[in-house]
Length: 94
Image 1 (cartoon, rainbow, N blue to C red):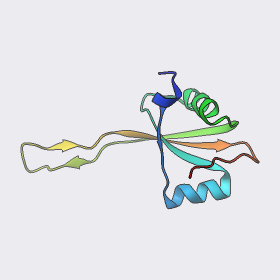
Image 2 (image 1 turned 60 degrees about the vertical axis):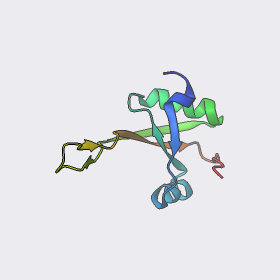
Image 3 (image 1 turned 120 degrees about the vertical axis):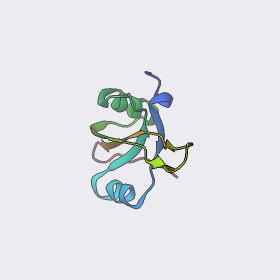
Image 4 (image 1 turned 90 degrees about the vertical axis):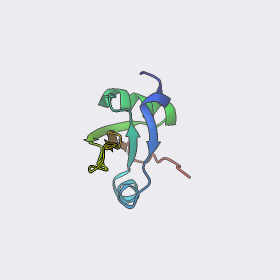
């Protein structure tokens, strides 16, 4: 799982994530659930060519769906990483 494309799945562009980018120089990614902070840091540095100063992660459980029938299930579990870049560096996401 050392490939950056397998670790970083997508970027989250929400209002809160946009505010973090503007105020703290932090960007929010959806990452592979088994990736650790060091692997996420190396993947962002290799993929975007920027210097990372910190990584915070959070695991989210999938929501239960359709409980009253036999075909009940869940949405997928996922992991979020908030990556802080070195001062003066930014990501062009558009």
